[in-house]
Image (cartoon, rainbow, N blue to C red; front, side, top):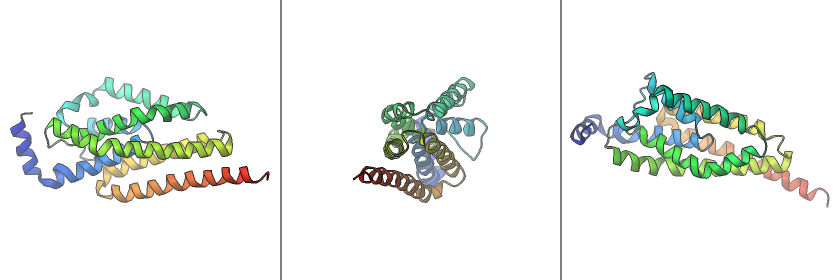
Length: 211
C-alpha cells in the first residue's frame, strides 16, 4: 500500500484506531507471548484469517494468515504446550524464550498497527511488544524456579497449565476489549508474581525447617 494511502487512512481512522487500540491489542498479544511463544501468534493468525473481532494486520504480515503459516504455528504451539509440561524441558524453553519471546512479541504487536507505514509499525511493535514479552517471560522464570525448588519439578505441569489458561485469556481480552488490557495485565502480573513469591516462600520454609 502506498505511503500516501496509509497516511490518509491513518488520518481518517483517528488516533484511537491508528495508535491507541492497536497499541493495547499489541500489548496484550505481546504479554501473552511472554508466557507462550507461538499460541498468541496462532490465535492472531486465526482471528485475522477469519476476520474475527475486527482484527486487521498490516499488508506485510499477510503471510501470517496463509494455511502453511497457520499449520506451522499450530505445530509449534502444540510442541511448546507438550514440552512445557516436562520438567527440565520447560526450563530450556523458558531460557530460549528470553530471545524468541521478545521477537514474537514485537512481531505480534507490530502486525496490528495496520493504519501506519511498515517502518513505523515495526518500530511500534518493538517498543510495545518486546519489553512486555520479556517482562512476563522473566516472571515465568521466577515461578518455575520456585515450583522446581518446592516440588522437585512435579508441580511444574500444573503451573504450566495455569500459564496456558492465562495466555489464552489475555489474548481473548485483547481481542474483545483491548481498552481493558492495562487492567487485565495488572491482574495477570499480580497472579504471576504472587505465585512466584508463594513458591519462593515455601522453598525458604523448607530450607529453615531442618534447623
